Image (cartoon, rainbow, N blue to C red; front, side, top):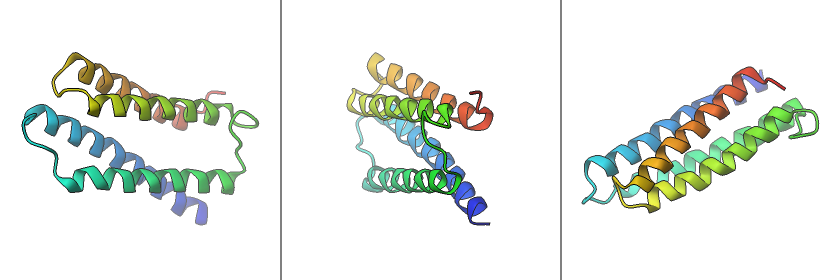
Length: 123
């Protein structure tokens, strides 16, 4: 029962992360002259902290260890680091710039790669 609660919480935080990232990007794209509301700068950090916490909790429950007994989890964590770097690059770049678009597209590639690995666990 505990596993299912933590797993579904983790999935909820994943969906919220994707939604909030896209919301922030597209608001900056549509209105580059206006700063993002303060709440949209704070809530993603809280959500991502809860996402990390539930992910670590799932690792504790399942006894998965990155690169030891779950290679897919290690790869997923490396892609997560790339996502964090690319997300930072995206939001530091000038809205509508090539760098902003590149960061956004590569961030989304990372997100969908992480989801793919989580759903398929190929190795």
